[in-house]
Structure formats: structure tokens, C-alpha cells
Image (cartoon, rainbow, N blue to C red):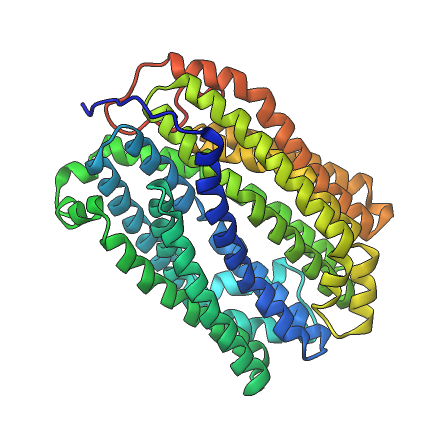
Amino acid sequence: MSRIPTLPKPSLSRTILAIALPSMLTNVATALFGLADLWVIGRLGVASAQGAVEIGAKLLMTVLVVFNFLRSGTVALTAQAAGREDDTAQAATLVRGLAAALAIGLVLLLARSLVVGLGLRMLGASGPVIGLARTYVDIRYWGAVPWLLNAVLVGWLIGRRRMRTVLAVEVAANIVHVALDLTLVLGLRLGVAGVAVATLSSETLKLAALIAMAAGEAPARRALGLLRSRATWRAGDLLALFRLNRDLLGRTALLMTATVLLTRAGARQGPTILAANAILYQLFMLSALLLDGFESAAQVLCGEALGARDRARFDAVVRATLAWAAGGAVLVTLVYALAGARFAAAFSTAAGVIATTGAYAGWAVAMPLAGVASFVFDGVFIGSSWTRAMLVSMGAALAVFVAALLAFRSLGNHGLWLAFTLFFVARAVGQAWLLPRLTRRSFAAPAESGLVSPGLADPISSP
């Protein structure tokens, strides 16, 4: 059994910010992938091209983000192992995660024709949009395997508090991405195809850089040996990993279902609304990725505290992270209130799209405050492996979203964004209600010798 250390008690705020701030910058760099694509294609002034990139990107993100459990689960298990000071468990987490990513990537490549055809129909693409969207997806789909492997490597480095390393890689990949976007789309006039090639190339570059960075970490040097070890592939450890990833997969699938419903409802209102909603969604994603820095802090610090069996530290992390995140949400909301409409207008040269975006820009202002608590609770639940409870609360929130879509249909696009806002409020309410009971049961349970079992003392999954 690995030794259970007592975590040091430095300034908690300083510790949270040391993780959250680099994570914010990393997430902003990640958001530049979508923002750069949207801005560059918007320079062409063609709503169908802008809508095609939105449809194509949303399809691929719907497919790939479903597997974001590769990152989240790796963060949780790596942080818990770090809390126990168990380098072997950290290395085993990396090996299992990369193996799972390769297996999933192979399945996606084999199912390519089915996924692309079904996905474009599901998102409601029609007219000139569908042909351009297919061009985009056919090129960028080959980046699925690098994306999946990157998710594991990033999660592993975050779990080891290597946020600055992740940030450096993300910034470098984005510099290449923006340069390729400008060259291929505005220079060589390759349009939608140029956007797809730029994204595929930068994702592949990121994979090479992350492999190099992870290889320099001490636990990673054990990875090749563990790859050949039977202990790495023990049924019990694989089953525990499967349970955690199964619940995270289900949770992410529900989240992406809400995003697909948002996109589909916008597409039914025509290409102008679709393009405007794409811009507003990118603004929402920018705010979410900023505030997700606090989710990353909660994942790592709650995972470490649970691995070390330090209840007082855990409770303090939850309270402090919520407080810092609320302050960050207020700041983002103020910035959007002052400059959000002008910022959104910069993403298109089509007068109709600009006017429509301005008419609904208030929802981009409201979303940071509406969503911030759910982001932090996601970090707490993932870091603590309370994945079954997280899945159930997400299912309840999706039911609220669907009911709101039907109830506010007469409000048009305003009703659509109101329903989406309530979706995040419902998530936070459900998670806050479950939190006290989950905490009591998890810290009352005996410590595990290996990883903390997914759903440990989870009232949703416990008999």
C-alpha cells in the first residue's frame, strides 16, 4: 500500500490561482482554434461558408468531446495518485489512457462514412451549407486520433500540476494554427478546406509536442515497462477505469446533446440565425473556457485531497474555488456587457449576421454568471470520481432544457437561449444538492490502496 501523506497547507488562494490562471490562458488559446476559424472565414462575407464551418466544427466536437472523459478521467486518477505519492499509479494511468484513446480512434476511423453522413443530417445542414460542411469534415476528421491522444496527455500533465507546460504547447500550436488559417484561407483562397487543413495540422503538431513534454516527467519513464506488465491490465483496475469513463462518457454525451439541440434549433431558423448563434456560442465558449480554469483547480486539488484523505483541505478547496470563480464570472460579465456586442460584430462582414448577433448579444452577457457554479462543481465531482452522481444531475438538467425549449418556443431565438441558460442553472442546483452527502460518505469510506474507485460512496450508485 502506498503511503498516505499529509498535504502541505500553503496559501490556498495562491495554490488555486497557480493552477487556474495558467489553465485559463491554456483554455483561451484552445478557444482561438474556433475563434480564428470563425473570424477568418467571416472575412469572406459568405454566410453559407461561415455556417458550414460552424456545422462541421460542431459535428466533430459532438463526436470527439463525447470522449473528453479521456482528459477528465486522467486528471482525476493522476491527481489522486499524486495525493498518495504513487508514481507507479500515475504511469499506469497514462498507459491505460493512451491505449483507450488509440482504440477509440481506430473505431472512429472505421466508422467515418456513417458518422459524417448521419451527423450532417442530425445537425440540419441543407442547401449550399451541407456541401461545404462535408468538405470541412472530410479533411478534419483525420485529426480524431491526435485529438484523443492529446486529451490523455493534457489530462495527465494537468493532474501533475504541469499547467505551464500545457500552456506553452497550446500557445505554440495556436500560433501555427492562426498562421495557417491566414495563409490558406485569405492568402491562397482555399476557403472552408483551408480552415480544415489548418486545424488538422496544428492538432498534429500539438501531439508531437505533448509527447515530448510528457516523456520528460519521471513517472512517464516507467510507462514502457508497465505497458508489458500484466499488473497494468488487471481486470479490477480496468473495470474501475471503465466505470469512471462510462459515466463521464454518458455525462458528456448529454452535454453534447444539449449543444446539438441548440445548433439544430438555430439551423431551422435559417443561415443568418445559424451564423449569429455560432458567434454567440463562441463567446459563450470563451467565457466557459476562462472559468474552466477554476474547474481544473477543483479537479486537481479535490483529487489530491481525496487521495490523501484530507477532509478539511477538501472542504476548503470547494469553498475557495467557488468564491474565486464567482469573482471571475462577474469580471467576464462586465467585460461582455461593455464590449461584447462590438466584439461579436467583428466575426462577420455580413450586415444581416452582424445585426442579428447584436440583437441576441445579451445572452452572451448572462451566460458566465449562469454557468460558473456548474463549472466548479464539475471539477469537484470529477476530481472526486463522483461520476455517477454527475451523470444523473446532467440528465436532470437536460430534461429541464428540453422542457424549456418546448415552453419558450414562441419566443423564437430568445427562447432558445433562455432554455440553454436554464440548463446550466439546473446543473448547478442538482450538484449543490448532492455535494454534502457525497462528501460525508466519501471521507467516511476506507482508503483504497490504489486508485479511488469511481463513484466512491456515491449515493446514486451505492446500494
